[in-house]
Image (cartoon, rainbow, N blue to C red; front, side, top):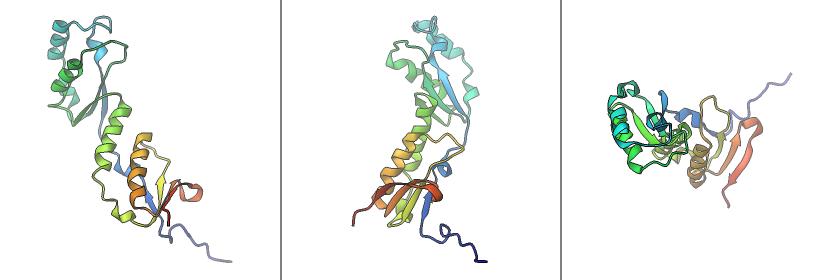
Length: 168
């Protein structure tokens, strides 16, 4: 009987797994509409009072996304004011949904990576993840990887989809 050889493990193939760069922490959305009259109208005096009386310490060390779940038309200063209250407690505050929060986190992390270890190597951009990796992170990653990699595929070694191959 022939010995089974793992050709993937013995190859120069590198795996780039975005899940490895997932920032742990509690993600929270703050919905501005909770402080609007009937969820739509910002009454400045009431709004400021509600923010002043809100327990901001509950966001201690959390990753916070500020958004409005209604179609309210808000002045730009409304979300900025909320950020001034949340920032002293939160690890990070962004304007948007949790997806936009994840995008901002990955943007920050992926911009700091040294991609030189992938220089002239075939790379698999791992596709399946258990953590909420946004599609935008894959777009960011491929842009960096194709600057250095010989080729980039998406998925798993057994069923990878070719995305990019450096021209000779």
